[in-house]
Image (cartoon, rainbow, N blue to C red; front, side, top):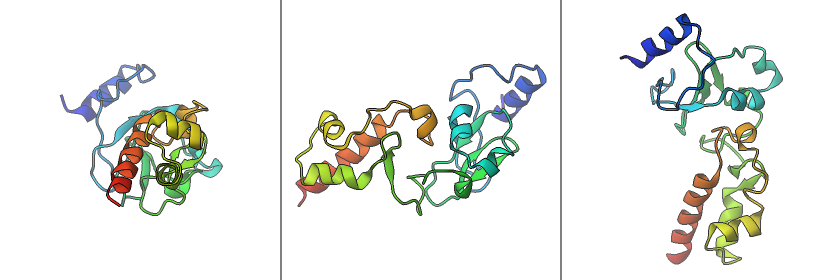
Length: 166
């Protein structure tokens, strides 16, 4: 079944407030046409500016992870861009600083510094040296609405590869 039809049927049946698996419905970003990733409503609600929140409706939202696309969140009839979000969206090209852990405001650069200057090699080292992953309020702080652990692992691996290549 076409995912958009599944979504419309859910609304017609009045069950739009049920929990939806992240892979149950797919929507493409209206600007770049890349497939969006499901993001909890609570995430969108907590990260919008007050002005943008006035246009927020209880809906299923998706996040656009394309770096050169200005859209951050979208649903079937609502779009929020970077200017509507209260934090810099790290994977977007123009974002500064590039937070990896939003709860504790840990950046890519801080993780790189922890590897290069402080000898960090593991996730535990990164947590100890930077304070990353100590707050656990990712649902409301991370624009992806998920724990930053995978993103930190990715940055750590890049930093280790960079450092070993020097």
